[in-house]
Length: 356
Ligand SMILES: Cc1cc2nc3c(=O)[nH]c(=O)nc-3n(C[C@H](O)[C@H](O)[C@H](O)COP(=O)(O)OP(=O)(O)OC[C@H]3O[C@@H](n4cnc5c(N)ncnc54)[C@H](O)[C@@H]3O)c2cc1C
Image (cartoon, rainbow, N blue to C red):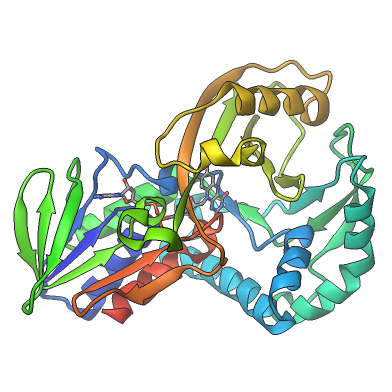
């Protein structure tokens, strides 16, 4: 084998497509432990976002303004790349706008965000060419929140399932082999390449590219930590008016409409220790809080039922930037995408392929 990629998420698949373009005749293999892609790329909330106002102000505490500008520019460019590669129809891209909501008790954060609105807009002008953040009245009738949202009209949503299906089709028609239900257990660097041990067989590859995101701590130790995120989706709600993507409580909660349903996730901050795991699962503590917020804040007086609940594993770390680096002569990785994989996944996959 010439190139072996571990993981068939957005990064692994984009890496394979870039490799195919650069090396038309090479043998490329993707190994995926799930029967389908089993990571965050098939389980996420579908926000095509750049960071809410409070998130950007938080970033400005730890990075220079220029670094924050570059971070947002990368996310913007990444979403444009995803749209260019796959087409808006194939991912059901809808620019419905994104809103940050502030709880009535969060006056300090709310006032600070409003005070800094112009400064942040000036900083991000090179990206958006107009004021990115605007004040917006509480038009959807949410309760227990300030009556003004901070809205970014450029924020959008996509259908993650469609995105992954399109990517998988492209990869398969590019003569890349995908082997599912095959876990990479270990590998050994040799002078000529890498010996790879999987749950099904051992083999030799010239280059190994690791795109396992939240499952990468096995090979990268402290640099990337798994972070479980729990989500639910309601059954269709008759006459639902809510449209767009929404961030609540500094981004610890997020929801959006999926046609006439509400997809709602978050609450990791209620029990960070338990949620630092790469085991799938849902907990009563977090699921009950999600339902409470649905009843009291998001859908007050609107009856709803939960259709489905699930969890996914993200890759987080002390720094926000992804890790795209060579680990040895024949091994490289592109991991730790945090909560921004839709925005940066295509580019990270490409950078990983370019690196090797
Ligand atoms: C619930 C949830 C909501 C999210 N919402 C959003 C959002 O709205 N917007 C956004 O931009 N981002 C969101 N994210 C984050 C985003 O989904 C991720 O950043 C992105 O999908 C990461 O892609 P990836 O390809 O790096 O990793 P993954 O998609 O996790 O892919 C890694 C793959 O590697 C496979 N694998 C792992 N170990 C092995 C092994 N040893 N052998 C073989 N295969 C292996 C896994 O099965 C998996 O398929 C969310 C994440 C979650 C969990």
